[in-house]
Image (cartoon, rainbow, N blue to C red; front, side, top):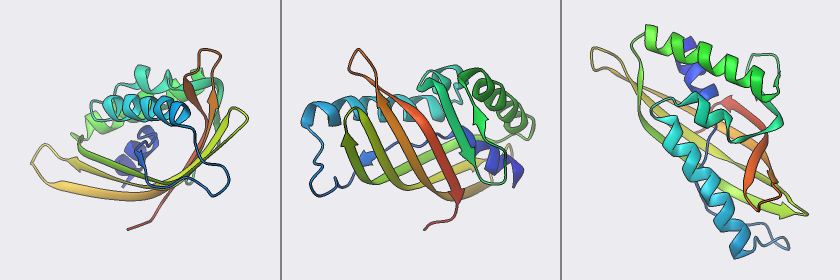
Length: 160
């Protein structure tokens, strides 16, 4: 279970957006830039590319995960992800599926809020698969170049 929870922590969760909130419809250009962030997250998750995952955070990013103290700042997040990757590798676990779904996205004044669920499937050395489901809540910030980064990421176990 620790390995699965560690993987969930490194899965910073991205996906296609299912809906936008009422009055706060996301402009097409903003949605496209946010989708680029989501795509980069997905591409980095399966191989466990912690350097790439951490690059998706703001310098003052905070990671809030179930049963753990908050992790604040890119350096601390990188160290935590490296430790978790080493644990997963030692246990012989690898990601074979990462399927996040964003249920709602709201953008206001250069800040975006999104929530949804995710599914991660890992495979052991012996070929056994282990599934993990969770919920997520994230805050994103628009960068000066128009790109987006994760500012706050929170997840917990549960969901479908």
